[in-house]
Length: 114
Image (cartoon, rainbow, N blue to C red; front, top):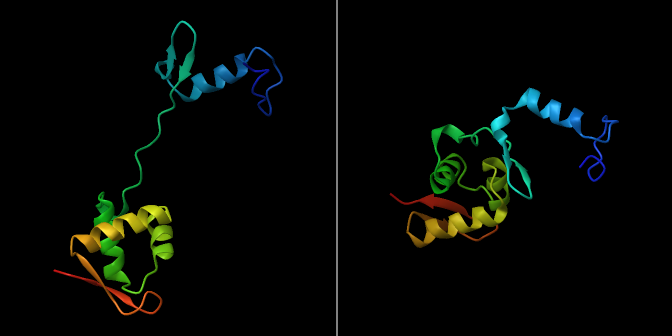
């Protein structure tokens, strides 16, 4: 394994040093061993929840309330979405009648419908 994946700072070929580093940081339960594979599943912290709001459309509504002239690109950067996801969520909000575009695409703003 160590010969296939060169790791900077590890000079041994048996990958024992890598294994020991992993075991110092994680529990042994992260290894799933089968007949032909060793699968390592690293646990990650739960995704950051912005302002206690988990739903993407609700997060967009909060962003629109804060700045009605926000662009999709600015919104995606602010909320941590891809531009594609922001577009999809905005389309969903428009189709459900929750938001309306006032003015042109370039100079307009968003209105949140009650």
